Length: 581
Image (tube, rainbow, N blue to C red; front, side, top):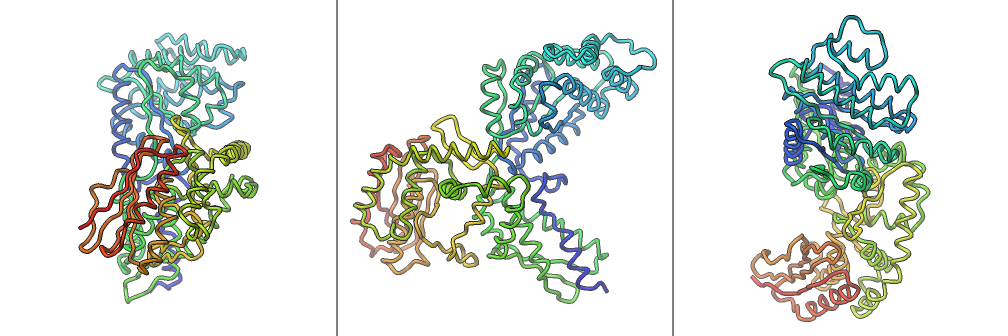
């Protein structure tokens, strides 16, 4: 019989929630079906004679590398020549452009060999030739582009990188057309991970533009942060065929997020079963944990993996033994959040950035990290100003709050300075923190490690996590988009205090006007709907109330606050209505 300590150790080892690296096991890559299908179709179109490529955009930790690996597996399974290069700053150094081009062509040749498109011996000869080595025997094919590259490298020629890549790719196409095996797919897919490095060499980006837009049959996929999108949009515009943009964010729905928790647990259970020759069976109780984890993380992949990793590890160390059954209980509690927070503090690359943030920068990132929606400088200015009211926000009169809102424009300049300062500090530490949309300059915390740091390191002291995140209102409490957050923070605690039903009172927000909503018998809904000026998106904030609750004054107060926000041009088309059952 195995000792309990050994069993616990093996359970901890079997933890399949890997939050520090990309997904290697195909079993643990979840969904992205729509994005994967779009990328695959785009690749097929280019392989069939088109030009262009794909941009995969997302913050650090969102799953770009895992997505690229899964796409590469899919392409290789279809016998499509596909190579992935993880870029570094040294690779894109202007002094090493020709060496980088040699690397690209070498990777394409190796991929063609793996896809059984070219004979092993032929790939060996061409690779040797590419690197200026002696070639045994005859190639029986003229490769002037590769000859040019070798001569340029030997002569240390710099201005002809565009010609070198163009002619080198032309040689590759010629090689697979004339020497490629019959009944194999021609062309190739070239994937660049950590593509944001390309922004360090504008000349190289320009070379990519001029070459890949005019080389049919070779698809280029570049993955990076939104900074890459801004730079590539400038360089690659206008595109003859365009680059498909794939933006990775949260899992698309709760079912996929549940799978992201359930399947790693099932894999761990199988590993333990096999480890002990079916002597021990492991049960994991996690239904309640799943709901709270998905609600708290907003379905972000890194955050789910982070919390699940530590929840599983804590549960393993506190597991219960029932004869031949080992039972783990995954709990969403303070110990879990503390462990996750400690991990984020010690994450490499952030130790210089995080301690150097001032109070305004910390408040800004804390607020934005907890938000499920992007926000403009003007929206953030208002939220931060109201948050400074702390507990008095719920005690101020509606008239006083209206005055605070309408006088907030003076804070916009300070918030802009805060944003610029965060960007400068992030750039100094080579971190992409804030992303912004082209329309309306709406900001988001792009780096998922930083988002998690502020999200889980600043949990409100009086939150009752085990009982469902019972809200503590001390200033602003993020709830949906900026407008819903403001409405919720002002009105929800007032109504709960008045009715004396704080534990049963419910609020709702969403990206529609809320007219579809209904509530249970003897209750009614007070619904505020609006259009955010920043992106013209429709939103609503609703509270359910007992029918006996007089809503006339509350409706008027809703209208006053929405009207004052409209006065400073943050929303429009606001309406307030009561719906009874």
